[in-house]
Image 1 (tube, rainbow, N blue to C red):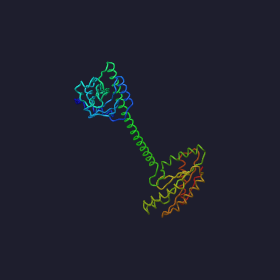
Image 2: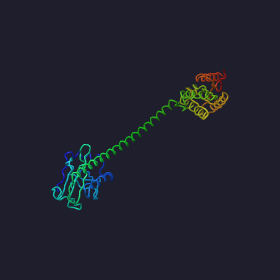
Image 3: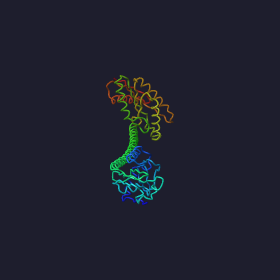
Image 4: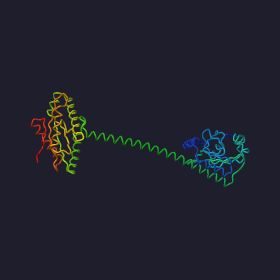
Length: 358
């Protein structure tokens, strides 16, 4: 037995073979059908699609025998791939010095006839062969040889299709992964933008909406009041003598007072309005669906609540209230509430004043 040599381009050939990912892959009916058709056309009892690996011959499809692989040194097809453009025909193995004492010839298979066509990839590299063989000497007619070559081309195309399908599947999985990463990044960016937007609308010390957020809410409330002919009132609260609180107790205590008043505001108008930090020790309140008198009563309760806050520091607040008038701007409404606040301050502080001007 003559052991088959290895092609000069063996490294490239093996790389191409591994790229197909067909070695040790599950059975494939399409390959099985090609082998069965080849044996029928050639009139042989056995056939296979072989892939010639570095040290073995593995059968992707087989008919008429059970062996899954053999050593490469004992492979007929390893001889066939040495002439990749030719059909290798052995009419009688006992008359061929390469195979006369071959294990497949002298053993259980008793191979006497072999015909194989190399399976070439797109670069012309032989990956294996489509072969037929029998336990009796034989030959192929011209039409049979041409049919075997045609089936080998189909087998080679099938290998390429399977490789392309796996590559496409990999790209699809990669795309899905990248899309998932992009979605996660987009969600994160959206959350960060939402957090940033929230930060631009929120006073960091008190957690209340800031002046900008209040302006947006007030504009929307005025639009609703006009559209649905509903009352709307606003109030401005200023903590009395707050500079003195800071000077006597320190700014940290002043910040604590602001936070405690903010918490009271938040609970007092929860679900029935909106409170915001307007600047410094001043807060703004939005009271939708409330007449001037209703808003005054709510603000009076608020003033009393501020006076009894259990924070160890005496705190009071002056409040000015105004009701929206048809057609006026947010600035005009706030200006009237500010005017009422000014009167509350001038009248002695710690009180609620309303703007009833016409």
